[in-house]
Image (cartoon, rainbow, N blue to C red; front, side, top):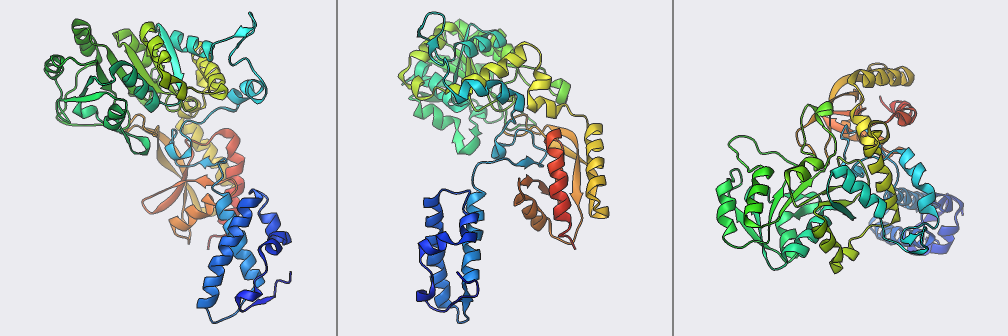
Length: 462
């Protein structure tokens, strides 16, 4: 088709199949399935027809072709793919939460790309139990009697409530009726599980007597929810898990501790702030503890439950458990991840903590190397910054970092757009009306790509 072909009326628009066969359009659509490409072409043509009627000046086939190609690019960017995290937020909800190490996937590749012994007992030749080794690792690591894994922590909590408190009351402090990611609220989860919400205390103050008074209403369990995604300061009071466990044992009421972002290590080494750990929850006597697998644990999305063996067994007998179980990829990855913690190699092998442990001086050194290679003069400078753990974990915890800050003739929004549409996209942040790429969440193997993309983009500056 000739690029200069004039399009004055609807009759001049080539057929959909003709456009789909056009060399440039066909090349631009190679990242998309053909039926979707055809659908996009049809949609662009429909919009083009409307604009054709509204405009008096003529247009060309090249204009139509470019509109189609532009739409292909927009849709293609919606495909799940790699991005470089220049926001400085290590556990970034929008960018897949915890980053996973390449070595972890290298070690499980053969388990998950072919057939495996997911539910097959090799020793006996009989049907086996799904995730048995991962659950054994989980129990050992948490120092609990048993453990199990479902598809996320909201599912873990729902399953616990439905198993232990269906049509029964659950005691919870009003200050712990939190909202988690995606608009899911603890009160809604409790109600949907079949349990009945028994709120006590106030938003900022809940005392032990509030729990004691609620015990008289014959609850099925006491639920404590760790506020892992926000903080309340000032005039506040909450009841320690140890006191709740003591009350639960006196009253024969199980205590469930939802940690949200569960962690197995002492976080003070990294952030000068101690986050309650899973083993601590178990040792205090919480009957069940649940937490996420893709936040501070540094793994895949999963909900982990640990605690008393009879309660874990009861949960696994619940028919709903099957709807929430995970597949071979998650079990294989969890086996590997939990092993890192058990054998003490987590600092090197869990990417989240490797990034968190990178010193500010090292980040500055990397930033200087980038500046030297891109040769952007005073248009790009290195400044001190603050990263974050983020992603619904450790609120208001900042990590010393370094950022590339852009001073140029373009607006920070335009600069951000140029980096977002690069290949791969670099997602930075805008602060104080300046675009910056924070180096805290950027791993060593991504630095060359940052250099190459930045070097290309700075040529577009005035």
